[in-house]
Image 1 (tube, helix red, strand yellow):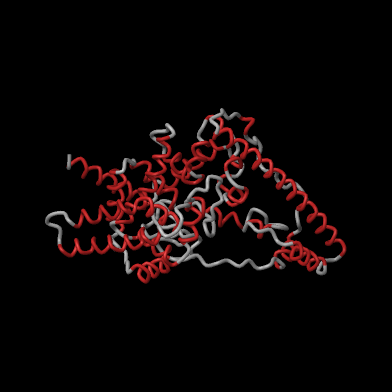
Image 2: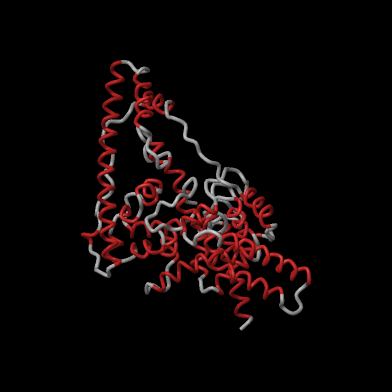
Length: 424
C-alpha cells in the first residue's frame, strides 16, 4: 500500500481529488525530503521563519566545540546553497509549465522544449556527523498537527447532523454489490480490482481508512480516505453534488419494486430522505473543489462521508468517481484505459494524467506535472519520467493483486458477471 499526505493536501497541479495512493506516500515522504536544515518545515509546506531558524542555529553552536562548529557551519552553508538551487529549479519548472499550459489551451502543439527535461538537483555537500545531527534534531521546533477525523468522527457527524446511520453489510456482500455497480457503469474487473490493489494494498475493507490497519484497527488516520477507492471527505461531497439526485432516484425506485419487503422499502426511503438533507447542505456552498474541501472539514461535510460505508450508497458513490475519470479520458479520445492509466489520472488529476500519457509527456520527468510540495511528498514519483511512473504503478498493482482482499474482489466480479449473464 502506498502512503498519502497527512491531510491529503492537494498538491498536484491539476487540482485533482487525490487518492490514498498519493496521501499514503506523503506521510512517509514528509520525514525524508529534507532531514537537514529546513527539513520538517518544508515537508509540511511552511519554511521556518528566519528568527526561529537562527535561534536553532545559535542553540546548537552553543553545544558544539570549535571543530564541530566548523563542521556544522560548512554543512549548514551547503544546505542553504542546495535550497537556493532547488528554488531556482522549481521556479523554472513552474514558469515553463505556465507557458506550456497556455499553448495547450490555444491548441498549439507541445514539444520537448516545453518541458524541463531534468530532475531536481541532488544534495552533494558534506554530511552531518551522527552525533551533531542528533543534537540538531533535538532542537527541531515541534510541529502542530491537527488530528485527522476518524471513521468514528464521520459516523457521529452523520448521525448528529443528518440522522443517518449507514447500513453496514458483510465485506463479501459489499464487494459483490460494488462489482455489480462497476460492471453496470462500464468499468472492467481488471480496472477496479487493480486500482483497489494499489489503493488499499490488496487487503482493504470497505470501511478502511488510510493509516489504519483494516484487519487489526491499529494505527492512526493519516487522511480521510475511505473504502476501496479511498475517497476523501471532499470527494464524497463533490460526487454527491454531481450525482446526488441520481442516487436518491435509484433508492426511491428500488423501494417501489413490487414485492419488496416493507421494512426494506422503509429503510431505502429513509436513506433517500437523509440524502436529500445532505445534498441540500452540500449545495449551500459554491460548486468548486476548494469550497468542497473547506465544507468537508465541517461536521456537515464530514457527515456526508459516511455514505461510503452504506451498503446501498457506498458502491454507487465510489464507482461513479472512477467512472468520471474514465469519461474524461473518453472525451479526450482515449478509450479502454488500462488500470495503471486510470490510477495515473486519479493520482495526478484527469487533465494532467492525460498530458502525461501523450508521446512527449511520457518522456518528461515527473516534476513537470506536480507542484514542488506534491513531488517532494511522493517518493514514488521521484526521479522518474511519466512513462516510468506509469510502469511503477503497474508493478505495485502486480505485487498487490494476489493479496487476499484483491483475490476476494476478483471472485466477486466473477460472481457478478455470472449473474449478469444469467439475466440476459
